[in-house]
Figure 1 (cartoon, rainbow, N blue to C red):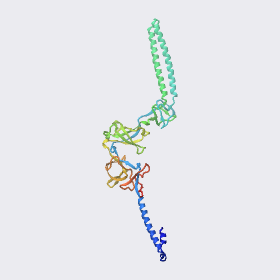
Figure 2 (tube, rainbow, N blue to C red):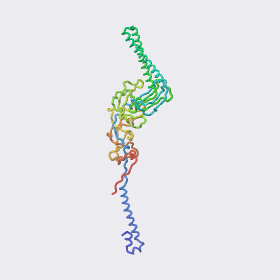
Figure 3 (tube, rainbow, N blue to C red):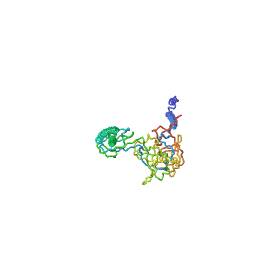
Figure 4 (spheres, rainbow, N blue to C red):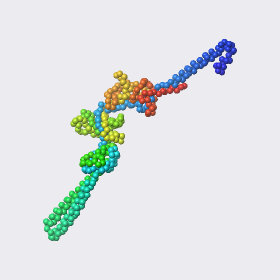
Length: 400
């Protein structure tokens, strides 16, 4: 039975007294409303949102160990170990340029063809001279044979035999010289075709069709991109800290924050008299991932085992007065951890962590916004994070 029906079922005397049942209904409804409000408030409390930081892998940075802080600095460029500057070996006019800058070539591929008309004429003349010399030699050889026969029969003098031998020897020398001239002419003809000495890429073309080139003029450069290495210089003052085989870490201009690893392969024995720097070469640990463009500026450091320390990027460190702290991710919570800082590397943007963190600890990469100690942390997939905890998502408690 409802409240209204209950009230209406009361004796009629109530009706004559100003309808007091209406008052009862109002009171009952008010009590019911108060009771329902308490239940709604309790339900709202159960589902109250608790802030949790959404942390994706890109929002996290780990504490690493490095021997690069304060290590010798190397500056230089990325250069190929295999490179060829092809120059003109004959004076001629450029007739054809078969390969342009950036095009790949195989060993023996034609790159530039020079005009060989005059050289072919020289070859023809040399071949004719060779033919005449061959005939002259054969004739003198036959004369010498007859003179020997006649001399044995006593029909000619020794002087005639000696003269025949002299003429034969002279013809033989002329034949040898004619053969050499033919070989030289053929070489000159072959040098009018400039071909790739190895598999690689045309890096710099210096001539065009119609140009007249002289002997020694540079025509084209060919490099092997698979043989890239870091050729740099280091101050002679730091030479005592370097050894063949030491690890090198460097960055290449044009490739952002990509860090390449390598090893010292060669250290020159003499310093430059003007700059007092020593040239050295570092090979890539992964040659297949090396930049394929020669001449790019690079800068790096030689890693030293004596300088190894815990390091962290400065963007993860926040300062408050004279103290510094980081936001460490410990399980499912965010912890504010005070740290002691050491030496700073301006080139790499890193700072030594003397105390407060251990190797492998995870901290927020770039903490911003309002963060609180012991805040809940939720790991999410890449691309779904809150950029080091700038935004928060609710964690809803289950309602009983």
